[in-house]
Image 1 (cartoon, helix red, strand yellow):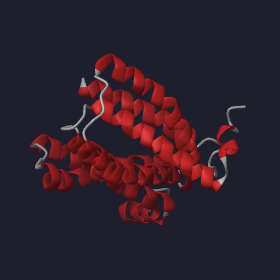
Image 2 (cartoon, helix red, strand yellow; image 1 turned 90 degrees about the vertical axis):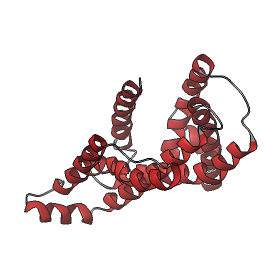
Image 3 (cartoon, helix red, strand yellow; image 1 turned 180 degrees about the vertical axis):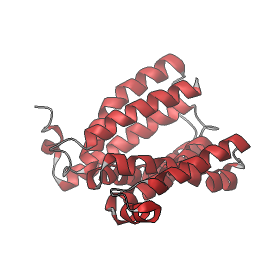
Length: 213
């Protein structure tokens, strides 16, 4: 089941990333683009919780984790991830997000006491090798790496990968207080509220619906 959800998530991410690169949206506020994404996903998560989980109000420690750790990380991640695709070609920066698997090793070990299996470690190493060959021009391996490091989107995506690994670690730790679906729902609600407040201070509420008409 986990593999199926992973494949569905990967397919959804590819469509989402293409949306971020659409003409007319490249210069748009990353928070606004995430606002639309979260608004569309919230009803789906509510339905999934209703069908496959139990509605309840988690204990205070859950909210401390969600508000004090998860929300700041997800806010920064949502902004930097979109900026990466707005700043550089999707084919260049997209694969770099998979480096989050590398960052998960020390984070998972320190905070969760988990280490990957031998097969998992081999998979992570293959992920590390791939971005080394990315680049715009055929200047050899080191030339490609230089091209990659010159891209502003590369640094946005590397930061996003680290934040994503941190978010996964925090999320898994929180599962002792709430089910995965319930955590995701509450996380979406708070993230949507936080981004709404940010956009309101920036431009006001009228700007939120300009692409809906």
